[in-house]
Amino acid sequence: MAEEVILLDFWPSPFAMRVGIALREKGVEFDLREEDLSNKSPLLLKMNPVHKKVPVLVHNGKPVCESLVIVEYIDETWVRRCPLLPSDPYERACARFWADYVETKTYSAARKVWPSTGEAQEVAKKEFIECLKVLEGELGDKAYFGGERFGYVDVSLVPLYSWFYALEASANFSVAEECPKLVAWAKRCMQRESVAKSLPDQYKVYEYMLELKKKIRAQ
Amino acid sequence: MDGVKLHAFWASPFSARVIWALKIKGIPFEHIEEDLPNKSALLLQYNPVHKKIPVLVHGPRPVCESMVIVEYLEETWPQHPLLPTDPHKRAVARFWVKFIEDKSPNVWMVYRTVGEEQEKARRDSSEMLSILEEHGPNKGKKFFGGDSINIVDIAFGGVALWMGAMEEVSGCKMFDAAKLPRLNAWIANFKSSPVIAENLPDRGKLCDHLARLREKRLSSSTSK
Image (cartoon, rainbow over all chains, first blue to last red; front, side):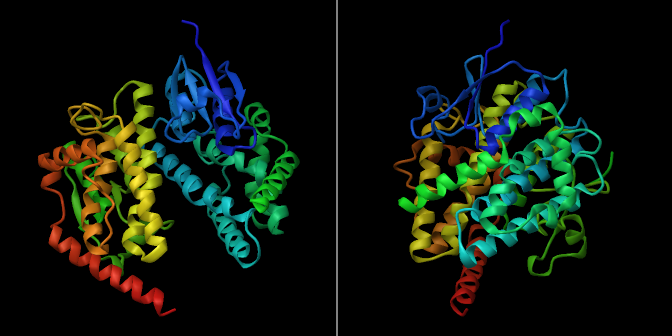
C-alpha cells in the first residue's frame, strides 16, 4: 500500500525538528509542508483542532499530534529500522522519564530565557543552566542518553541545540562553558544525517528570535 | 518475579493513578506510605531529580512520574490492557494523557492561589474541561477507553476526582456540570467502578488536609 506521510512543520520549532529527526532516522519518505503560523493551513486546523499547532504528522490521512507522541508513533509504526526506544520496559521507563524532564523542565525553562530581561532573565537563565547540568549529569560518559545507540531522549533534546546561540546571545552566557560534555554530545548527534538535515542553522534561529522579540515589543 | 513496592501518599492524585493501574491489573504490591514533610531517605535516593512520590520500585529498580509508571506497568504486566494495540489509537490515547498533564496544573493553581492568579487558573481549568468535553475520545462511551478503563481515564481520574475537594477548599468553581454533560457522566461511571471507588481518599479527610495546606501556603506567601 502506498504510504502517504505528511509533516506539518515550522522551521524554528524544536518540536517539529524532533519529528523530522525520527522520520529521517527511519528512512521514511515524507512530504514536508512548511506552515505560516500567522495564516495556518486548513489541513493544520482540521488535523489539530485542539491546539492548532505544529508539528502534526498525517499518516494515510490520519493525524498524530504532540511531538513526543508522534516520535513514539513513528517508532511503533516503522519498526524495522533504528529503534528509538529500547526494548526493555525498565529502560523504556527511564527514557520516558528523561524525555519528560526535557519537555516539562528544560524546554519550559528555555522558553523563559530569551523573551525576558533584567532580574527575571537572570532567574530564568539560572534555571535553564541547572536543567542542562542535570541532563549532563545523566548523560555522564555515555555517547548518547540511552548508551551506545542514538534514541528517544537524544531526539527529544537535541533540537534545543539549534537554539543555543540565540539563548546565549540574549542572556549572555555560554552553554559550552557551563556544560561542555552536553555540547560535545550535541555535536556528536549533529554528525548524524537525520539531525543535520532537521536542525536549522543557529544564526538563522538567532535572527528569527530577534524578529520575534521586535514583534512582542511592538504589541 | 521481583516484588513491587509503591512509595505513595494517601492524599495524592498521582499515587492514586498508580494504585488504580496496579489494582486493575491485579499486581500485588507493598504500599509504603510516605510522610511528605519528612520524606524517607529511600524516597530521596530513588527519586533524586524530583524528590516526589509516587515511586514504584520493582525489585531493586525505581520508576518515577505517575504516567511513566503506568506505561511501565502496562508493558511489564500486559493483562487487563490500559492501551490499545493499534499504533494510531495508542497515539490518540497518549495525546490526551499529555493534554491532561499539560493543562491540569491549572487545577492545582486554583487551590494554591487567590485573586487574579486564581481567576486565571480557574479560566484555564474550565477551558481544559470544555476541550475535553468537545473533543475527548469518549463520545458515546462509558470511559475514554470504551467499555473498560484505560490510560486516559486513569490520567484524568487523578484530576477530576480531586477537583471537587479543591473547589470546596478554595471556594472557586471550575466544573460546571450543566455545561459538561459528557464529562459529568464520565465522572459518575468512573467513580462507580469498584477499583476506583475502593481506592479513593475519604472526602472529608481530603478537604481538611487540603484546607490546612492551603492556609499554610497562603500565610507563608503573604508573610514574605
